[in-house]
Structures are given as C-alpha cells and as structure tokens.
Image 1 (tube, helix red, strand yellow):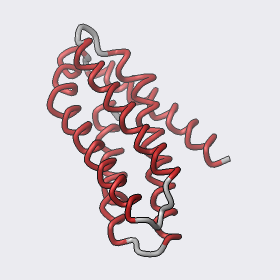
Image 2: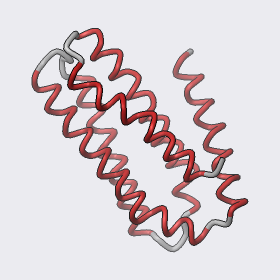
Image 3: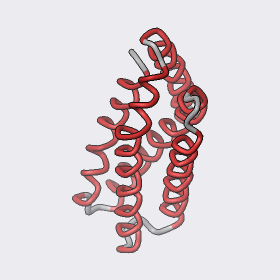
Length: 145
C-alpha cells in the first residue's frame, strides 16, 4: 500500500472516534475514546515525521507548516491529558484539538500530497508506505506493552 493510501486510512480510522466523543457522556467512555485517539494520532504523527516528511524535497515551507501543525496537535493532546475528562473545559479543548487535526488533514490533502505525488514515483510511494506501516506497527506494539 502506498504512503498516501496509508495516511488516508489513518484519517478514516481516527475520524469516527473523534465524532463519537461529543456523545460520550460517561467519564469512562470518554477516557477510552481519548486513549484510543491519542494512541492513533501520536503513532500517525510520529511515523509521518520520521518517514514521510523527510522525503518531500524542495518544499521547506510546506513541510515546516506541517511540522508546526503536528507540534500544535501534540500540545493539545498534552493539555487534554492534564484536564479532568469530565469537565466542560476538556470538551472545549477537545473541540479545538479536533479542529486543528482536521485543518492539518486538509492541508496535507490540498498542499502536501500533490507536491509529494509529483516527487515520488509509484515504487517510492509504496516503499514509504511499507516503512511507515512497519514503524507504526512497532510503535503500537510498544505502546500496548
């Protein structure tokens, strides 16, 4: 599977969890959803930083913007871990986090992917997809242990 398909599948896996959060009234359900979201988002972001972005050449501004987005998203995750999940403030920060994540995904689709598609041939995109898949698998195994 190529890198673009793999990244989009991550979006498809995370998005329903994000959408389920506002309806999660019980503290335990919110915590379960958040822990799953956090694990998936951090794995997704760290793998892209390690494998995808270093292979986008000649687009320093675009890559820097993406890295800034990732840093912002990770700050939101950190903030969310420090706020009581049952509070209204937590839901407000979660909403901001969700919006930041959606903006990042839109930026990737609109600006980064087209440039990366132009640079990577099919074999390179597939090779990066395999690398990111293995790295994510290692990360998820490590986190679950």
